[in-house]
Structures are given as C-alpha cells and as structure tokens.
Amino acid sequence: MLAEKLRAATAAAAATANPWDLSYAVWQGSPVNFFRVNAQEANPQDIIFKPDGLKMYVVGSSSDTVNEYDLSTAWDITTASYSQLFSVAAQETNPTGVFFKPDGTKMYVVGSTGDDVNEYNLSTAWDISTASYSQNFSVAAQDILPTGIFFKPDGLKMYVIGNSTDAIWSYDFV
Image 1: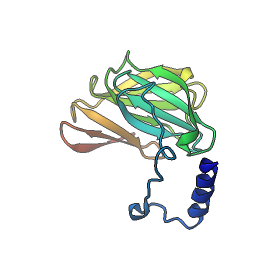
Image 2: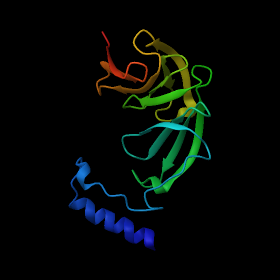
Image 3: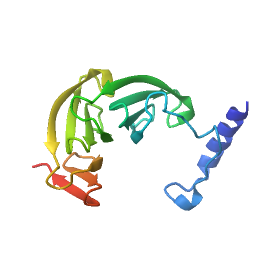
Image 4: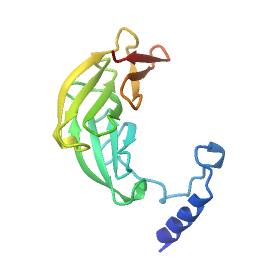
C-alpha cells in the first residue's frame, strides 16, 4: 500500500519534475529507491540499463561477472529481480566498467588486470547468456588502471577513463 502511494506520488511529481538538474534530486528513503546486489556481487563497479529500462546490468570485481536483472516496471529498481550472470574471468579478473551497444548486440567490459577493453557478441540482443568473446583492445599505453568505458551513440568514438593517469582517453573508429 505504501509502495503504491509512493509510486503514485512519484508519477505525479514526474509531471512537474526538473530533469537533469541535481539541485532537485531527492532520495525517497529506504527501501523505496534501494536495491541490493550483494547476493551476486560483493564489489559492484558499474551499472548500465537497457534503453527501455527493463533490464539492468551490474559488473563487479569480486565475482568477475556481469549480472543481469529484469525490472518489471521500467526504471524502477525496486522491481528488479536477478536473472543471470556472465563470467568475464577468462578475459578480465578485475572488471570495472561495462557498456552495451545501443541495440544490445555487443557488450564491452573494461578492467585493470588486462588493461584493455573486451568485446563480446550477443546472438540475442540484451541476453548475456548468449554472449561470446570476440576480441580485445589494449589501452595499456594510455592507462594501466582503466575503470570506465563509454561510446558515442553512433559507435565512432570510445572513451576510457583511468586511475593511473586520472585522464579520459578518446579513441576513434576509422
């Protein structure tokens, strides 16, 4: 009952919300905007959502996996349920960042053990159980502790951030 009232209030507030302005951010309190991933990952490093908000992925360095969660209500993490995992340990034993191609057919994992970006093909979009390792790209010449990854939406630029240089590195696809 309380959860329903809070969701209704959140929906009503969304109509008058001030998106993208942190000065208006409000945490609604436990357990409304709270979801624990510790049953799957003790050291979560990064999170990404499917564009429709119905799937959430968490990469972590204690289990060396990408964990997939289904959300019954888009973008509402309180409706998340664990779905499955994909181990990246054969390529990276300290994964720190994850990114998906916008259509969900490729997944990229960056980590500081291999100092590289690992690419995986997904034969079924957004289903990590169908992932297979494709190739890697070393970023060690720029940073030996890469921690995050992001792609320009058209896929023509890749950005990697690292702790050893405290820098963001840009890579072009030609």
